[in-house]
Image (cartoon, rainbow, N blue to C red):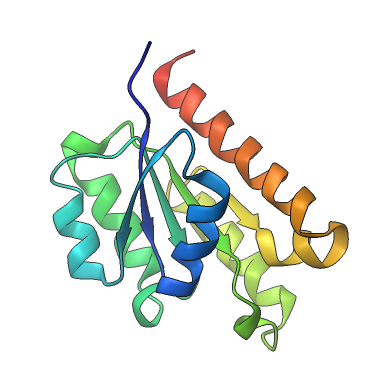
Length: 143
């Protein structure tokens, strides 16, 4: 049996709580609340890096560049997410731009968990997030 995937979650503490509820089993989650913490955590490459759109005052793209620049992290997938209710006042067009930029910079996806919650409910949003994470982990393992 393989060991649990180590997922680095770079986001606010409130968002980490969401991920812990949805992904803690069977994964090993690690939280980074700042860019510097996340970069230090990359010294031991995770199986997946999940980063909130509003991570550390908007440093999502800095973190994606740092991940892609590190030769030890070449195979680590990057998933951008929006999951906190406090960010609903921003226009959805902004998040389309984030999705496009993440793709252009070499990220593997964007999950709008907040939108999924609003459209389909919390349980379905959780199921969708788990499915995206599992797909990225399988692809990175070459399964």
